[in-house]
Image (cartoon, rainbow, N blue to C red):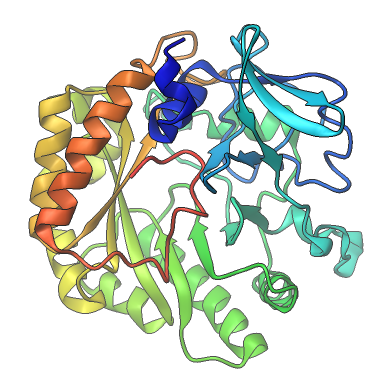
Length: 372
């Protein structure tokens, strides 16, 4: 491992996401009780399944960078407990001290029908309250799912969250999480299903959150099936402050090949038209183009960043994990160095574009699997 990892936290984070990480038994003490454990609200990001074993959801590097914990028992990276201090190692060489993230108290609070709040909503990173209002994607039944997606197998393997969540329960969880003082924004998503039905579901959820919190608008992002036409304004009227579009891949041919079902319903051109409309409605910086970074060449990815930034949208590029249950399981992501170099070029384009950061809706403390 290069010596620069000791100071280059971007490359270190990228390498941890690409190579995965493991932890000794001593280092895992308190995970699931004192420290936040994984509750698979949507996908599984680990390199291997670990049903029945509590693993950290994420951890902090010394500069405050949040890193998603992606289990890989063969990884050269390991978190060890040294005299009560957690340290990250690469082989035999110590890199830096790390910290698990404190477990929210509301995780153990109970709802009606003997349901735990953590089965409804989870904290992503340090300050983002995540709700998947329906763990479902219609493309799997036809074998047309995105090749990187393991939504269905994750639900079957872990069963740690409810597949469908009552709007009133979501509102109760939101109130409890905000009252605890740990939440700055929400992220809501729902797999993939009929547009009209999804808009109605989201309306009910946001109405519940706004009513129970006593506010008019909710900081955070809705990431629905691609919103088009009048649905964009309907989402805005729910009171959510930002909207995201899971474009996944910028290169049009690769998008059609990697996301066959989604591409049949929403073309590259339709995405761009919808994002343009969304920026007009939600405002510059309050619309996000979401990508799975590492599945296309550097130049096409950067072209996407430049184009979306020029439209007034922000970009969220998740570092691809070839996770179990997906059709690309067992493949390899690019190196951490590749990710670090490309993301720095992307950051330069974003800064040049001058798009507002939108950090009130999405920030570096939320995203353990994003480098930008």
